[in-house]
Length: 115
Length: 111
Image (cartoon, rainbow over all chains, first blue to last red; front, side, top):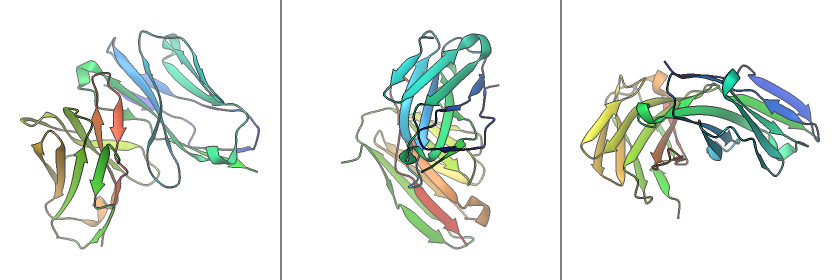
């Protein structure tokens, strides 16, 4: 069975702090994709990143960075110098070719960035 | 214009009523999905469709039905709504690289 676990339910930081959101996944498939989505208070889902299982290279996009480690089945997300606008719920998700591309979501981490 | 649209955006209905949520997409994707999000939880898959003739149940399909009228349209129906179906509903499409594109969501309240 496939599963995504985000152990941190809520995180609260002060602006300009760095924060890491953890994501651990389980799958037996060798070809799969990992995602991060942001859900601001307005409710829409904003795509942040997709990673395939054959590419373990870390990625940086502005203040955002992602660390993918197959050895520990983790795909962690770090926000550097957090801002109030980063306050949202962040979801990690998994899909695989063999499962028809449907997304398995973690429970989400609610990030609160205080000024 | 948005690539994935959902109507209505908000709906309040009563227990026992039939309700339909509609989803349209202009992305040209064959794969479409309906998800449900309960407060404080991640999204759960209700139904998904690979094309007009291929519809599959997801994790929580009981109490729901779907119709894929065309490649671009995928509707979700609640035959007899109940209060625990109060949730935020998302439609999504998927491209060949497994990226999913979500609609803005429909907030449904069943009284």
